[in-house]
Length: 270
Image: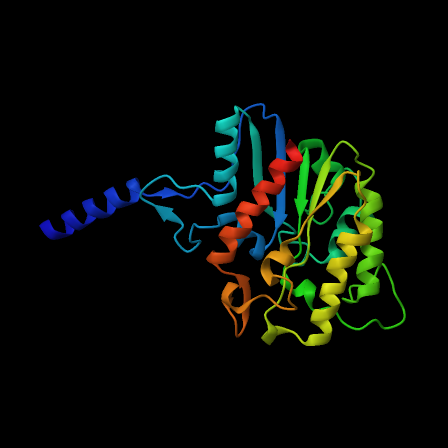
């Protein structure tokens, strides 16, 4: 009985001393409010050097992206807030964030009310000054064009992606007082794609940077693909969770990307 009481006391102290990792950076009356819309790849970068499987710590801990921004705020007496959110959530709307899905939610079903529980741009731009969004790595498995490009098609072809991005750009331009940051597509490991699809992923990324992006508008590009591939076709094996099958970025590249990501945000804010 005595040993059970001691064990219960130890477990109680342990539970009270553990603190959940802080994921967002918020202030009262922030100068700038930022939202980052992502799925699992973005979450890895958001956490950076904090292991996601260690949800609780004995000491206060903050995900790397908001921590770095807080350091900047403290040094420069700023109040820039940043939050993250899975988008789409995968409840009513499926867990898919390809070009078609942003087009579908933000262009085709635009308005002041959520579409299948997902916030539209009309809603997000009322709350945030900077909106950042990205795709997860399956976006890079780009198929050959079928000769019938269709903005309303979910088929992952270059032609469809470009149509969807062009309509997205027109939509983003409707909110000139909001800054948008778009990530280039996360890369796949070689084992999860083929040379043709990977080359088309490079082509799409280059098109986004060199043709779709317009200087002087309210859209900026964060070249995540270049960080992951260093100019190659695939996510570098040393940057993958598992080069044989899991294209999620590991802690090594997530930490590097998080620092470059915050640098990009600060550059835009300044």
